[in-house]
Amino acid sequence: MTQELVTAIVEMREDDAVAVATELLDDGTSPTSVLDACRDAMDVVGQRFETGQCFMPEMILGGEILGQIAEVVKPRMDDVEDSQEKLGTIVFGTVEGDIHDIAKDIVAFMLDTNGFEVIDLGVDVPPQTFVDAVETSGADIVGLSGFLTLAYDPMKATVQALRDAGLEDVKVMVGGGQVDEHIRVYTGADAWGRDAAAAVKIAKSWT
Ligand code: B12
Image 1 (tube, rainbow, N blue to C red):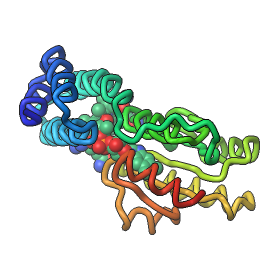
Image 2 (cartoon, rainbow, N blue to C red):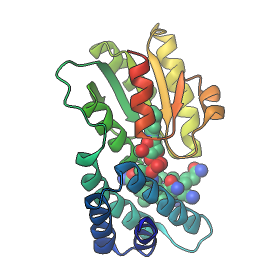
Image 3 (spheres, rainbow, N blue to C red):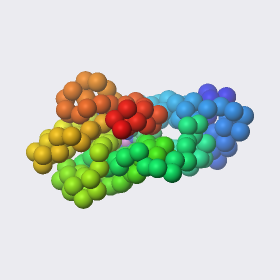
Image 4 (cartoon, rainbow, N blue to C red):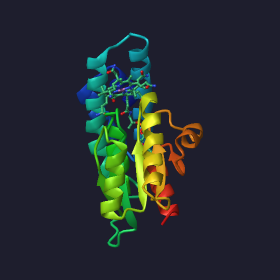
């Protein structure tokens, strides 16, 4: 039935997609599997955009469908804990030049519900804004999200700006889109994660 979800998203059947996602969750499918299906569907949408088979309106609608599904999935995340004591503070945002925020919002939500204080700076965030937020909040961790290839240089610049400001002890993780170990090394970040669960695991390992 996850294939049904992929098909509904790819075919832009908004109501069906949300209904199928809800049904899957009600039937016991894990939130992670539902999100994986969303990722598969968005990969197809992205490839179609890349090859000229669909255009911006479809990508915008795909984003909207995904946003709605995320709202259904978030409260059902398996490992949501209602932690009283905060494990640490994380400054999080999508880097300069990039406005993709659906994934960022999911990761920020997961970190928050797993006991971290999350300062979400939004999208298109310049390096200095991350530095200022860390200095003001005393955060221990910075999370950088980015989906564009063009986001890798701002990620690198943000890590450098934190180091230049003397914030060597602040741990930085990167993620989103095609980010992998190669990009982690390029940006100088301390870790990279494939999904929201990985972000939580990494953050917990640092606190
Ligand atoms: C939806 C979408 C949009 C929407 C964004 C809506 C929104 N509010 O976010 C809109 C339509 C606005 C958009 C705009 C553009 N987009 Co766009 N978009 C996508 C699409 C189809 C899906 C992205 C998405 O949300 N995926 C769903 C998420 C939830 O899935 P996920 O990746 O599994 O999420 C997990 C991880 O990312 C991880 N994660 C995320 N951040 C972090 C951070 C940390 C620290 C960690 C540990 C983990 C982590 O956790 C998430 C949750 O589990 C992708 C294609 C794709 N395959 O990704 C293209 C894609 C990213 N877009 C692309 C492009 C080109 C653009 C535009 C430049 C198009 C244009 N010509 O204007 C603009 C960019 C504008 C800008 N300056 O940013 C390209 C990028 C190509 C490239 N290599 O640079 C892609 C790959 C499409 C393609 N194949 O061509 N886009």
